[in-house]
Length: 572
Image 1 (tube, rainbow, N blue to C red):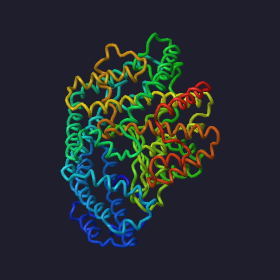
Image 2 (tube, one colour):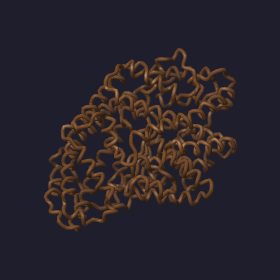
Image 3 (spheres, helix red, strand yellow):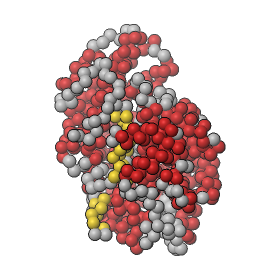
Image 4 (spheres, one colour):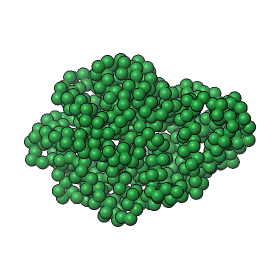
């Protein structure tokens, strides 16, 4: 039986037949034509049309998600890959053009003015933006972009090294970076980097092809740069380039100095004159790595208990996912790297994919993806599919807040108080470390897509320059090529261009949820849940406000939040 073939559907179809043929576009096309043929001259007709379009898109998107999930769970399975590519080429390309016509039909309806302006503001704004950006000539380019992104995933998922007498994935090799034996850490680090460097030319080529495609799409849509096009595609209505540049400045001023102070303390505690790249994840007191679990089932059971302590509903959600086999967690050869939560849009259920190897970070990853999953559960009863998905900047508040809220309830994995504090400290230090990295990746992409004429060496040199601006104190002497190509491991640059600063915006929101919880845990969780239930039905600043947090990621917000984190670290 195919993966996820058993997922139940609690919401009955009213427009589509129970079985739908995805083998060819001609089997799907009649449903779009039926919607296009309707007269939308009354509010009731328009409301019914919106519900039926929502059902149609939910069913199609779920099929695409299922094929993507199956492919990433087994990147070596050519049948799964072909099924996904067939969907992109035969179904998705045609859907984009047909749905563009539906959106134009909706926007032209005289009954649109009869709809509740407040309720439909976000949907109308989004439809108008998508119609303005749509170019039929970009549809095949988007398919090619998706296929190139998958070639990067497939390549990275296939990489293994022989280490300690056995073949291991690069994700599995990550555990060695927490081992006290410095020689072992260095050997593991070098093995991974050397394996990745063997593919450096291929990775650079994939990226150059992706960049060229993206610049063509931007030009087709009438934009001078892909950056401007990407910001509109991502519906960044509430902030723009200038706010991002100020974020970079704020990170330099408020976060980088703190990160470097912590690096200095790390070097002191490790009794090293200088840190090397393999010294950044080990416990600074050289204690053995935390070992919260051995098997994925233990990870699930522990996170279920943690989620239940945060809110009883959250525990039930994790139990539902476990029972419905909506969790695919263990790392193995042939599995795509990284982790994600995917929404099964018709079933209105979440699926979590990750590469767990028994590290403390795996607990955080599952809590993170669980936060996304809780967002899906929170919006299950929203009739419009468009509103079941919040802007990414708030989706990541859902996930990162769960990391922090769950981090206050880690006894399921760490009954020993010292280990609990170690884990909490490690997480907060990770927050401080990731913010400059996000700024670096974001600044790198701003440069890439506003400097069309550059060589591979120019690109590598600019990445190195950004290290001096956002990097830590580690010494890369003799490792210059590894440093210059270290951006190759950041999948967002390849697969989701400009989708990364959202993590920083959301992290600052999540830190506010966390600081609220320090004053009143139950109220902070209630406000968090209330905001999740809005889905994407309100503009971004209103979603933040519902959670009792500010939508701001400039220097004024960064400074007090970093002070709160530093104060908490002192207590740990």
